[in-house]
Image (cartoon, rainbow over all chains, first blue to last red; front, side):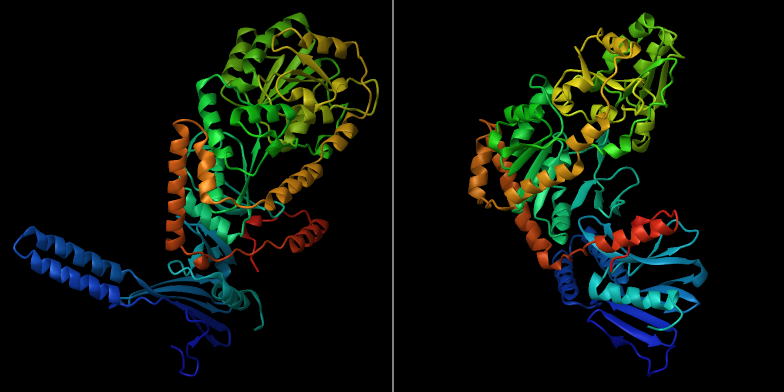
Length: 172
Length: 423
């Protein structure tokens, strides 16, 4: 819980941050909504389709499956992702979905080896990502794993901010 | 300068080599012996992405058998970049694989700005295979870092005459010839020993030959030799033997000649015996090398010369150091790049016309391939717009060099270049 004067201030249209002494939090939003134009159009089409085919019995199953798939997609769409860095305590990486569910992962300061920015080859793109290398673990923890914001200014700001909390004694 | 290649085992993604050279290991499917599965359009999206983000102007492909090379040149030309090709091998004209590869090469080289070959023999071969105009082909030989192959006359065993063979143990490198020679030489000269470095499918034949003629103490198979150890193996020998059936430019013999000179004049030198095929005669001066027909008898001449210590003049290493240097290669390649940067891009119809001339049926097929490639490019430009692709940061070479230098002066550390920060 943060006091009201330390509220989330926007840096770019994607990134906002919150700063307290010894704490930085960076939040990247995506502009996904539950009821977006495409969803409404898709649902109306689905409704028309099921009304037209109301006599055929198995079509209800098909419509049901399509609706279930839509619900599942909406549930797993990421609304925002954040990284919270607390000096001498650690780093928490959190993913919030449209349904309100959030998954967070905490890494304590002693287990953080390094925070890096590197590039990776995905299916048909090369993207920049920021990651935290933890001790005694094979895989790095990727920050903003689903949203993958651009390098500048987002990733660079987050990188410098998080590193200043974790790897230095004084505020920049 | 960046390198794009296929992934090697676990090594995929973006890595930096020791000097800061960026390598993209693209995860393509590898079918056999490091050759990728030729998917013509599948490589286009990732290639386009890499080229746009790095602001690439020239695509330089290597190796006629590399499918990634042909695809990259094709897609690069479609996107309007300049293209250049280096051929490292010689090929025949008669057997099935050569005919197919030559047709494919003709396809790629119909629309290319420049071709580089590694020897004059290779130039003749390439010009004939791909029906090119010789004005568009340059010869830039490979080079050797002579300082890595300094000779050491004390390393060789004085009781025996040691013959060193280092190569991939495949058919092309004349391993059958070697299997036939070794028992005869060992029978004729009792004081001769062989050291064979390298690995490959023909290793089994060599082991069988060793067992059959009971040559366990005379023939030593040391297996695969990493590059930094090659010199240590070379200096153990008096003679270097190269039995290739075909060779465009043999770096191995240049390395061997570099490693062969000692400072004390009465010790035996590493002399080179090679089959006189392909580009081999162009590589070393006449006094450094003995030729043998691709038959069995002529190694004896070299052994004879060594045993009776026909002393060769000194400073092979110095001669080769001046003749072959990577700096020279880089300068000449840069001239090629400057030359091709100044050419104009031809319109699509002109490209189609060039491909159409490749053959009666092949020309039409090639034109269809190119047309589809162009359409695919337009499709990619719409789906993944150019502005959405973020440009990569340039690697800070000067900073890295000074950092490396200062680190090297302080302590013997190893740099973990995978995790270089991008500032």
